[in-house]
Image (cartoon, rainbow, N blue to C red; front, side):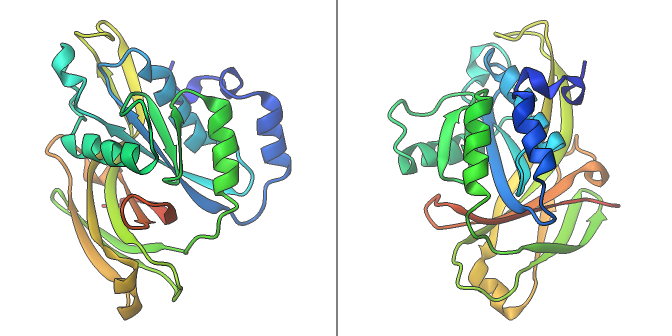
Length: 254
């Protein structure tokens, strides 16, 4: 059964989902949920499932949940090479550990909401509480337009209204879903499904740059990716791995 076919009631009480549905507001504030995960980690599949459910069902009133599944590379040495892993995401997680004063250091699965709260990635109740809080924080409205595909290169523009917000701009190319039949390691013999898999991420400027108008950027998809089926996620983050102050997700249409 796929990620989207599992009842969310197994992860989050139906009262929480029901309340979110009945109290839904016309406008939702973007909340960025990052999951540091790995195919070699036996504790990670439930967190991957939760990540997909958060995006698919959008269970928190007032929040537009945008997900990033960042596969770290430190599990690759334990018998299985995760094809989605990157040392860049390990470095990002390490920087978060310092910023958020994580005494245990880096671990998987780890979920981080809006760059301000971190916890074990399969803790659905903590995720709901954290997302609810994050949705109440003012954000800048980012807009991505003119998305085009040329081979493996995806180009787009990001813009925002004038504001006092400051921060760095990042862009990521994301696979909405992926699956792997793992042959070795802790998950050997299992069919794993993932959501929001980050295939590439890079800094593309700062919010200050947007004062001059829309900012163009390019992202290169990996050779095994299908750009036309991906998403572009752009987010603004205060310097030195601070809070997320804006985020937007849009599909790539060839």
